[in-house]
Image (cartoon, rainbow over all chains, first blue to last red; front, side):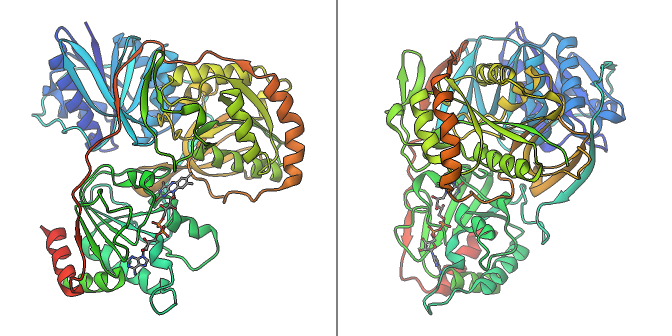
Length: 339
Length: 268
Ligand SMILES: Cc1cc2nc3c(=O)[nH]c(=O)nc-3n(C[C@H](O)[C@H](O)[C@H](O)COP(=O)(O)OP(=O)(O)OC[C@H]3O[C@@H](n4cnc5c(N)ncnc54)[C@H](O)[C@@H]3O)c2cc1C
């Protein structure tokens, strides 16, 4: 009989993020499929009551909250203490949470305190004959496993963008407040800042991922690089499409080489094996060659097209739906005119 | 200026350019020809090592240890490639570096090795590592090491650490949407799991290599065996995704037409 604890950190306005609602959707589905299981909710943050009301009809039998101003920010010591307390209070056997940056930092250590085990970056699960299996990738999205484990408590961090968000009626529910013993707080969160000085180019909710490769800074048919022109074309395209900007490793690494670079890009834009593997409906890769293993930056893009001068482009052959063998400078210029 | 005792947890992963094929062995999943695959220093742990060396250089009296869990023979090969990069003292733990081992077990083996390092001063201790490995890619091991060492100030996906000089730490961590969270920590001890950081890969320095190697060989000989597996985990399958797309290759289409097709697709 699994005791499922759904964990969420509450936004400052009392809402739950999309990733939090997705993991609630998964937790509710799991509790329905695992016969005899129970579902409780554990919320962190001072607006927990409001958040509990918004998901009152999710089917959970009890709601717990760790609130107080210390729990409004994303900080390891306070978050780990809150998660530990919620785990102990509910005697949870399965703890389900979104793999946000905040929970990615805090849930593993809290699970360790509970003498539990954790699996992260979960992209799917199945329940057959009351046996619960998860799916996750190994070797940076190169191979996928289906697996289960015997130890409890078992914490599950779910990849954002995979599960359908829970949707249901708000209501009223009673929330039991849990007291937490905090260690000395030695860390202060000062705020957030953008990673680049220019415009914000990473847009997780965009429909389109625009991937730029090192070809944009290479010598072109006239024997000269045209980096400024490339940058203008890219900025213009991003403004018009509101696409999210991804890059190959070669292109972002140039920022450390001292050569003329595309100023929009930082390491945070890098997709692939040592970058991110974002989820978007569509992806357009331009001037990317890449060896086969690095194209895992494409892994979670549904519809993929590529523009490259080289018909053997490794980003495209067998991996994209369409490869346009053409000059990306010319094509993007025209695309921008049409948009 | 403060002196730090910096532990970097990092091991080997298959060279990212290798083709990887999963196999099933009596002890669980593994990689075909795993022992033969050329290995590299796990990229994010590598960034942590370069950041550690830079921090140590700028804070005299600091020292860097690299704590590596992996098969001894492969660790030795790895050292040949990284010993020339930056000064460090190796602490080798002889066990599996497979991505399919459980992070809980890896964390236990690593924290046990750290706790035994002679002369380590907790009040100066910074535990560095990668924000995720390129093998297991779980992003949970460093936090568990920190817990086992009783460290309550932890940071994940760090791209920048600055030390204002009063012993405190100013840290930038990657969060959602291409932003950084900025935090200030009173000082060591702390755990920092690094993303890419800000430093390029250092060039090889033969003198550093020679100095490192003197201590590396004895460290490898002293490597403590650790049983690191995946107890309690049952894998029902591990597969490389098979779908290969039918790529429509469009050659000789006028630029205007390509642009129109792309715009129609984007705006659909
Ligand atoms: C440890 C390690 C980790 C790595 N991790 C990653 C990773 O996470 N992500 C990643 O991307 N790579 C990664 N790589 C690097 C990878 O091996 C490749 O070097 C890189 O992906 C290639 O980058 P690229 O496609 O931008 O550049 P290039 O290989 O230089 O290709 C440029 C392409 O641009 C095309 N081109 C040039 N001009 C035009 C034009 N006018 N119009 C159209 N096309 C044009 C060319 O035909 C060519 O195909 C990693 C490598 C290592 C060793």
